[in-house]
Length: 384
Image 1 (tube, rainbow, N blue to C red):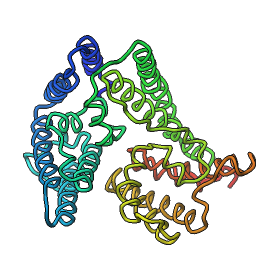
Image 2 (tube, rainbow, N blue to C red; image 1 turned 180 degrees about the horizontal axis):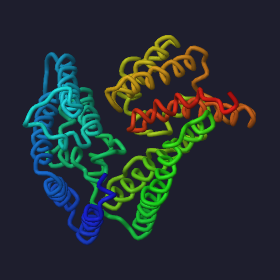
Image 3 (cartoon, helix red, strand yellow; image 1 turned 90 degrees about the vertical axis):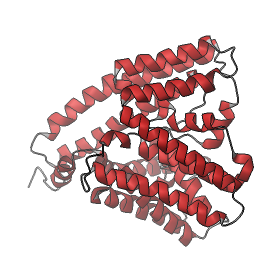
Image 4 (tube, helix red, strand yellow; image 1 turned 60 degrees about the horizontal axis):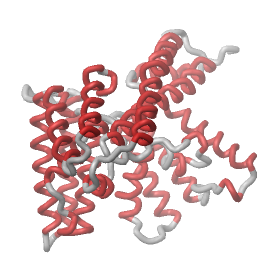
Protein backbone atom coordinates (compact mmCIF):
# COMPACT_ATOMS: atom_id res chain seq x y z
CA UNK A 1 0.00 0.00 0.00
CA UNK A 2 2.78 2.44 0.90
CA UNK A 3 4.51 1.86 -2.42
CA UNK A 4 1.86 3.50 -4.60
CA UNK A 5 2.33 6.81 -2.77
CA UNK A 6 5.36 8.81 -3.90
CA UNK A 7 5.84 10.55 -0.55
CA UNK A 8 5.82 7.23 1.29
CA UNK A 9 8.18 5.70 -1.24
CA UNK A 10 10.65 8.57 -0.88
CA UNK A 11 10.45 8.40 2.91
CA UNK A 12 11.28 4.69 2.96
CA UNK A 13 14.08 5.18 0.43
CA UNK A 14 15.39 8.08 2.51
CA UNK A 15 15.46 5.90 5.60
CA UNK A 16 17.44 3.25 3.76
CA UNK A 17 19.96 5.92 2.75
CA UNK A 18 20.22 7.23 6.33
CA UNK A 19 20.92 3.72 7.61
CA UNK A 20 23.58 3.33 4.95
CA UNK A 21 25.24 6.61 5.90
CA UNK A 22 25.21 5.73 9.62
CA UNK A 23 26.28 2.12 9.18
CA UNK A 24 29.34 2.66 11.38
CA UNK A 25 27.03 3.22 14.39
CA UNK A 26 26.27 -0.34 15.61
CA UNK A 27 22.82 0.58 16.98
CA UNK A 28 21.62 2.58 13.98
CA UNK A 29 19.19 0.07 12.56
CA UNK A 30 17.63 -0.54 15.95
CA UNK A 31 17.20 3.00 17.28
CA UNK A 32 16.82 4.95 14.04
CA UNK A 33 14.51 2.30 12.60
CA UNK A 34 12.17 2.48 15.59
CA UNK A 35 12.01 6.26 15.33
CA UNK A 36 11.31 5.97 11.62
CA UNK A 37 8.63 3.30 12.03
CA UNK A 38 6.75 5.33 14.65
CA UNK A 39 7.05 8.62 12.77
CA UNK A 40 6.05 7.09 9.44
CA UNK A 41 2.94 5.42 10.85
CA UNK A 42 2.09 8.53 12.90
CA UNK A 43 2.28 10.80 9.86
CA UNK A 44 0.12 8.38 7.90
CA UNK A 45 -2.52 8.26 10.66
CA UNK A 46 -2.39 9.33 14.28
CA UNK A 47 -5.16 6.86 15.14
CA UNK A 48 -3.19 4.06 13.51
CA UNK A 49 -0.09 5.03 15.52
CA UNK A 50 -1.97 5.14 18.83
CA UNK A 51 -3.57 1.77 18.17
CA UNK A 52 -0.31 0.08 17.21
CA UNK A 53 1.63 1.55 20.11
CA UNK A 54 -0.97 0.14 22.50
CA UNK A 55 -1.17 -3.16 20.58
CA UNK A 56 2.60 -3.57 20.58
CA UNK A 57 3.06 -2.71 24.27
CA UNK A 58 0.28 -5.07 25.36
CA UNK A 59 1.64 -7.92 23.28
CA UNK A 60 5.21 -7.32 24.42
CA UNK A 61 4.02 -7.53 28.04
CA UNK A 62 2.18 -10.77 27.19
CA UNK A 63 5.27 -12.11 25.41
CA UNK A 64 7.56 -11.45 28.39
CA UNK A 65 5.00 -12.78 30.87
CA UNK A 66 4.59 -16.02 28.93
CA UNK A 67 8.35 -16.45 28.58
CA UNK A 68 8.84 -16.22 32.37
CA UNK A 69 5.67 -18.08 33.35
CA UNK A 70 6.29 -21.23 35.39
CA UNK A 71 2.82 -22.77 35.70
CA UNK A 72 -0.27 -23.09 33.47
CA UNK A 73 1.86 -22.25 30.48
CA UNK A 74 -0.18 -24.06 27.84
CA UNK A 75 -3.62 -22.60 28.73
CA UNK A 76 -2.02 -19.15 29.05
CA UNK A 77 -0.39 -19.59 25.65
CA UNK A 78 -3.73 -20.53 24.05
CA UNK A 79 -5.52 -17.67 25.83
CA UNK A 80 -3.07 -15.09 24.49
CA UNK A 81 -3.46 -16.41 20.95
CA UNK A 82 -7.24 -16.42 21.32
CA UNK A 83 -7.16 -12.82 22.57
CA UNK A 84 -5.24 -11.68 19.50
CA UNK A 85 -7.51 -13.58 17.13
CA UNK A 86 -10.55 -12.11 18.91
CA UNK A 87 -9.11 -8.60 18.55
CA UNK A 88 -8.65 -9.03 14.80
CA UNK A 89 -12.08 -10.62 14.42
CA UNK A 90 -13.88 -7.83 16.26
CA UNK A 91 -12.10 -5.09 14.32
CA UNK A 92 -12.79 -6.79 10.98
CA UNK A 93 -16.48 -7.09 11.87
CA UNK A 94 -16.50 -3.35 12.61
CA UNK A 95 -14.80 -2.74 9.25
CA UNK A 96 -17.52 -4.79 7.54
CA UNK A 97 -20.22 -2.66 9.29
CA UNK A 98 -21.57 -5.74 11.05
CA UNK A 99 -21.05 -3.68 14.21
CA UNK A 100 -20.77 0.07 14.45
CA UNK A 101 -19.27 2.45 16.97
CA UNK A 102 -18.28 6.13 16.63
CA UNK A 103 -14.80 5.39 18.02
CA UNK A 104 -14.00 2.88 15.30
CA UNK A 105 -11.87 3.90 12.34
CA UNK A 106 -11.15 1.38 9.58
CA UNK A 107 -7.56 2.63 9.32
CA UNK A 108 -6.60 0.72 12.47
CA UNK A 109 -7.17 -2.57 10.65
CA UNK A 110 -4.36 -1.71 8.21
CA UNK A 111 -1.88 -4.58 8.15
CA UNK A 112 -3.50 -6.21 11.17
CA UNK A 113 -4.03 -9.64 9.58
CA UNK A 114 -0.29 -9.78 8.86
CA UNK A 115 0.86 -8.34 12.14
CA UNK A 116 -1.24 -10.67 14.25
CA UNK A 117 0.58 -13.61 12.64
CA UNK A 118 3.89 -12.06 13.67
CA UNK A 119 2.66 -11.53 17.22
CA UNK A 120 1.50 -15.16 17.44
CA UNK A 121 4.86 -16.35 16.10
CA UNK A 122 6.55 -14.44 18.93
CA UNK A 123 4.20 -16.11 21.45
CA UNK A 124 5.17 -19.52 20.07
CA UNK A 125 8.82 -18.60 20.54
CA UNK A 126 8.20 -17.50 24.13
CA UNK A 127 6.23 -20.65 24.90
CA UNK A 128 8.79 -23.11 23.56
CA UNK A 129 12.00 -21.28 24.45
CA UNK A 130 11.04 -19.77 27.78
CA UNK A 131 12.91 -16.92 29.46
CA UNK A 132 15.75 -17.09 26.93
CA UNK A 133 13.27 -15.88 24.31
CA UNK A 134 12.95 -12.42 25.88
CA UNK A 135 14.30 -9.60 23.71
CA UNK A 136 14.51 -5.82 24.26
CA UNK A 137 11.27 -3.98 23.61
CA UNK A 138 12.94 -1.89 20.90
CA UNK A 139 13.56 -5.01 18.80
CA UNK A 140 10.08 -6.39 19.44
CA UNK A 141 8.53 -3.06 18.40
CA UNK A 142 10.59 -2.93 15.22
CA UNK A 143 9.48 -6.48 14.45
CA UNK A 144 5.79 -5.59 14.68
CA UNK A 145 6.02 -2.12 13.14
CA UNK A 146 8.58 -2.79 10.38
CA UNK A 147 7.29 -0.44 7.67
CA UNK A 148 8.49 -2.26 4.49
CA UNK A 149 6.38 -5.33 5.32
CA UNK A 150 3.72 -3.66 7.46
CA UNK A 151 0.67 -3.78 5.19
CA UNK A 152 1.08 -6.90 3.05
CA UNK A 153 4.06 -8.97 4.17
CA UNK A 154 6.07 -11.02 3.50
CA UNK A 155 5.41 -12.43 6.96
CA UNK A 156 8.52 -12.14 9.13
CA UNK A 157 9.65 -14.89 11.48
CA UNK A 158 10.44 -13.70 14.99
CA UNK A 159 13.61 -15.77 15.34
CA UNK A 160 15.04 -14.58 12.01
CA UNK A 161 14.21 -10.91 12.60
CA UNK A 162 15.85 -10.96 16.03
CA UNK A 163 18.97 -12.59 14.57
CA UNK A 164 19.17 -9.78 12.00
CA UNK A 165 18.58 -7.13 14.69
CA UNK A 166 21.76 -8.24 16.45
CA UNK A 167 23.83 -7.57 13.35
CA UNK A 168 24.88 -4.04 12.33
CA UNK A 169 23.50 -2.60 9.11
CA UNK A 170 26.26 -3.26 6.62
CA UNK A 171 24.98 -3.28 3.09
CA UNK A 172 27.78 -3.46 0.53
CA UNK A 173 27.66 -2.12 -3.03
CA UNK A 174 26.64 -5.44 -4.56
CA UNK A 175 23.80 -5.97 -2.07
CA UNK A 176 22.62 -2.40 -2.61
CA UNK A 177 22.61 -2.84 -6.39
CA UNK A 178 20.68 -6.12 -6.15
CA UNK A 179 18.14 -4.58 -3.77
CA UNK A 180 17.58 -1.48 -5.89
CA UNK A 181 17.07 -3.63 -9.00
CA UNK A 182 14.54 -5.69 -7.04
CA UNK A 183 12.67 -2.54 -6.04
CA UNK A 184 12.60 -1.28 -9.65
CA UNK A 185 11.28 -4.65 -10.83
CA UNK A 186 8.53 -4.55 -8.21
CA UNK A 187 7.52 -1.00 -9.12
CA UNK A 188 7.38 -1.97 -12.81
CA UNK A 189 5.07 -4.87 -11.97
CA UNK A 190 2.73 -2.79 -9.81
CA UNK A 191 2.66 0.50 -11.67
CA UNK A 192 2.96 -0.61 -15.30
CA UNK A 193 1.82 -4.20 -15.65
CA UNK A 194 -0.91 -4.26 -12.99
CA UNK A 195 -2.38 -0.93 -14.13
CA UNK A 196 -2.58 -2.08 -17.75
CA UNK A 197 -3.90 -5.54 -16.86
CA UNK A 198 -6.53 -4.14 -14.49
CA UNK A 199 -7.84 -1.83 -17.21
CA UNK A 200 -8.24 -4.73 -19.66
CA UNK A 201 -9.82 -6.91 -16.96
CA UNK A 202 -12.41 -4.20 -16.23
CA UNK A 203 -13.18 -3.72 -19.94
CA UNK A 204 -13.76 -7.39 -20.60
CA UNK A 205 -15.62 -7.81 -17.32
CA UNK A 206 -18.10 -5.11 -18.34
CA UNK A 207 -19.15 -7.17 -21.37
CA UNK A 208 -21.79 -9.88 -21.58
CA UNK A 209 -19.69 -12.89 -20.60
CA UNK A 210 -19.55 -16.24 -22.33
CA UNK A 211 -17.57 -19.30 -21.28
CA UNK A 212 -14.52 -18.11 -23.21
CA UNK A 213 -14.72 -14.63 -21.67
CA UNK A 214 -14.95 -16.06 -18.17
CA UNK A 215 -12.05 -18.46 -18.71
CA UNK A 216 -9.98 -15.61 -20.10
CA UNK A 217 -10.79 -13.40 -17.09
CA UNK A 218 -9.87 -16.17 -14.65
CA UNK A 219 -6.48 -16.75 -16.26
CA UNK A 220 -5.90 -13.01 -16.74
CA UNK A 221 -6.78 -12.22 -13.13
CA UNK A 222 -4.50 -15.00 -11.91
CA UNK A 223 -1.55 -13.46 -13.74
CA UNK A 224 -2.62 -9.98 -12.59
CA UNK A 225 -2.58 -10.81 -8.90
CA UNK A 226 0.73 -12.61 -9.33
CA UNK A 227 2.31 -9.43 -10.69
CA UNK A 228 0.51 -7.33 -8.08
CA UNK A 229 1.47 -9.35 -5.03
CA UNK A 230 4.90 -10.47 -6.19
CA UNK A 231 5.60 -6.85 -7.16
CA UNK A 232 4.78 -5.70 -3.64
CA UNK A 233 6.95 -8.49 -2.24
CA UNK A 234 9.85 -7.48 -4.51
CA UNK A 235 9.71 -3.90 -3.22
CA UNK A 236 9.41 -4.99 0.42
CA UNK A 237 12.30 -7.43 0.08
CA UNK A 238 14.47 -4.82 -1.63
CA UNK A 239 13.87 -2.12 0.97
CA UNK A 240 14.11 -4.58 3.84
CA UNK A 241 17.51 -5.77 2.71
CA UNK A 242 18.70 -2.18 2.22
CA UNK A 243 17.82 -1.67 5.88
CA UNK A 244 19.84 -4.71 6.93
CA UNK A 245 17.06 -7.28 7.33
CA UNK A 246 16.76 -10.47 5.28
CA UNK A 247 13.14 -10.48 4.17
CA UNK A 248 12.05 -13.98 3.09
CA UNK A 249 10.96 -14.77 -0.45
CA UNK A 250 7.21 -14.95 -0.97
CA UNK A 251 7.08 -16.50 -4.44
CA UNK A 252 9.24 -19.48 -5.35
CA UNK A 253 8.32 -20.42 -8.92
CA UNK A 254 4.73 -21.29 -7.97
CA UNK A 255 3.71 -22.11 -11.55
CA UNK A 256 6.04 -25.11 -11.45
CA UNK A 257 4.27 -26.74 -8.51
CA UNK A 258 3.11 -30.30 -9.33
CA UNK A 259 0.70 -30.51 -6.36
CA UNK A 260 -1.41 -28.07 -4.36
CA UNK A 261 0.57 -28.97 -1.24
CA UNK A 262 3.76 -27.87 -2.98
CA UNK A 263 1.99 -24.91 -4.55
CA UNK A 264 1.22 -23.46 -1.14
CA UNK A 265 4.89 -23.70 -0.25
CA UNK A 266 5.71 -21.59 -3.28
CA UNK A 267 2.79 -19.13 -3.66
CA UNK A 268 2.64 -16.64 -0.79
CA UNK A 269 5.22 -18.93 0.73
CA UNK A 270 5.51 -17.10 4.05
CA UNK A 271 1.77 -17.54 4.67
CA UNK A 272 1.88 -21.25 3.84
CA UNK A 273 4.97 -21.66 6.01
CA UNK A 274 3.28 -19.86 8.90
CA UNK A 275 0.21 -22.10 8.91
CA UNK A 276 2.29 -25.24 8.42
CA UNK A 277 4.66 -24.32 11.28
CA UNK A 278 2.02 -23.12 13.73
CA UNK A 279 -0.84 -25.53 13.09
CA UNK A 280 0.21 -28.57 11.08
CA UNK A 281 3.57 -29.15 12.79
CA UNK A 282 2.21 -28.19 16.22
CA UNK A 283 -0.80 -30.52 15.96
CA UNK A 284 1.12 -33.40 14.41
CA UNK A 285 4.63 -33.27 15.85
CA UNK A 286 5.36 -36.87 14.92
CA UNK A 287 4.73 -38.48 11.56
CA UNK A 288 0.97 -37.96 11.09
CA UNK A 289 -1.26 -40.54 9.48
CA UNK A 290 -2.65 -39.78 6.06
CA UNK A 291 -6.08 -39.19 7.59
CA UNK A 292 -4.66 -36.74 10.14
CA UNK A 293 -2.69 -34.91 7.46
CA UNK A 294 -5.81 -34.70 5.30
CA UNK A 295 -7.89 -33.29 8.16
CA UNK A 296 -5.25 -30.73 9.07
CA UNK A 297 -4.90 -29.67 5.42
CA UNK A 298 -8.64 -29.05 5.25
CA UNK A 299 -8.59 -27.08 8.51
CA UNK A 300 -5.61 -24.97 7.44
CA UNK A 301 -7.13 -24.01 4.10
CA UNK A 302 -10.41 -23.06 5.75
CA UNK A 303 -8.46 -20.85 8.16
CA UNK A 304 -6.50 -19.29 5.31
CA UNK A 305 -9.80 -18.56 3.58
CA UNK A 306 -11.14 -16.82 6.69
CA UNK A 307 -7.82 -15.01 7.08
CA UNK A 308 -8.36 -13.50 3.63
CA UNK A 309 -11.88 -12.38 4.46
CA UNK A 310 -15.11 -13.13 6.31
CA UNK A 311 -17.34 -14.11 3.40
CA UNK A 312 -18.97 -17.28 2.13
CA UNK A 313 -16.86 -17.02 -1.05
CA UNK A 314 -13.65 -17.31 0.97
CA UNK A 315 -15.12 -20.17 3.01
CA UNK A 316 -15.99 -21.96 -0.25
CA UNK A 317 -12.47 -21.19 -1.56
CA UNK A 318 -10.91 -22.67 1.59
CA UNK A 319 -13.15 -25.73 1.45
CA UNK A 320 -12.32 -26.25 -2.25
CA UNK A 321 -8.55 -26.08 -1.71
CA UNK A 322 -8.78 -28.03 1.54
CA UNK A 323 -10.67 -30.94 0.00
CA UNK A 324 -8.25 -31.12 -2.92
CA UNK A 325 -5.25 -31.12 -0.58
CA UNK A 326 -6.93 -33.65 1.68
CA UNK A 327 -7.39 -35.88 -1.36
CA UNK A 328 -3.70 -35.50 -2.20
CA UNK A 329 -2.78 -36.63 1.31
CA UNK A 330 -5.18 -39.58 1.34
CA UNK A 331 -3.90 -40.76 -2.03
CA UNK A 332 -0.23 -40.11 -1.12
CA UNK A 333 -0.01 -37.60 -3.96
CA UNK A 334 0.95 -34.49 -1.98
CA UNK A 335 4.59 -34.50 -3.14
CA UNK A 336 6.10 -35.12 -6.57
CA UNK A 337 9.86 -35.37 -6.96
CA UNK A 338 10.86 -33.99 -10.36
CA UNK A 339 13.94 -36.20 -10.43
CA UNK A 340 11.96 -39.40 -9.99
CA UNK A 341 9.27 -38.94 -12.61
CA UNK A 342 9.22 -38.27 -16.33
CA UNK A 343 9.14 -34.70 -17.64
CA UNK A 344 5.74 -35.30 -19.23
CA UNK A 345 4.28 -36.49 -15.92
CA UNK A 346 5.85 -33.65 -13.91
CA UNK A 347 4.70 -30.86 -16.23
CA UNK A 348 1.33 -32.52 -16.64
CA UNK A 349 0.85 -32.42 -12.88
CA UNK A 350 1.98 -28.78 -12.84
CA UNK A 351 -0.63 -27.96 -15.49
CA UNK A 352 -3.33 -29.79 -13.54
CA UNK A 353 -2.42 -27.91 -10.35
CA UNK A 354 -2.61 -24.57 -12.16
CA UNK A 355 -6.01 -25.52 -13.57
CA UNK A 356 -7.29 -26.24 -10.04
CA UNK A 357 -5.92 -22.91 -8.77
CA UNK A 358 -7.26 -20.93 -11.73
CA UNK A 359 -10.82 -22.16 -11.17
CA UNK A 360 -10.90 -20.56 -7.72
CA UNK A 361 -8.42 -17.67 -7.89
CA UNK A 362 -11.05 -15.17 -9.07
CA UNK A 363 -12.40 -15.18 -5.50
CA UNK A 364 -9.57 -12.76 -4.67
CA UNK A 365 -11.32 -10.12 -6.78
CA UNK A 366 -12.70 -7.51 -4.33
CA UNK A 367 -15.91 -7.08 -6.38
CA UNK A 368 -18.12 -9.98 -5.29
CA UNK A 369 -20.66 -9.26 -8.02
CA UNK A 370 -17.93 -9.56 -10.64
CA UNK A 371 -16.86 -12.91 -9.16
CA UNK A 372 -20.39 -14.25 -9.44
CA UNK A 373 -20.78 -12.81 -12.94
CA UNK A 374 -17.64 -14.63 -14.10
CA UNK A 375 -18.80 -17.93 -12.64
CA UNK A 376 -22.22 -17.50 -14.27
CA UNK A 377 -20.45 -16.74 -17.54
CA UNK A 378 -18.81 -20.18 -17.46
CA UNK A 379 -22.24 -21.69 -18.09
CA UNK A 380 -22.99 -19.39 -21.01
CA UNK A 381 -21.62 -21.45 -23.88
CA UNK A 382 -21.31 -19.38 -27.09
CA UNK A 383 -22.80 -22.12 -29.28
CA UNK A 384 -25.95 -22.65 -27.19
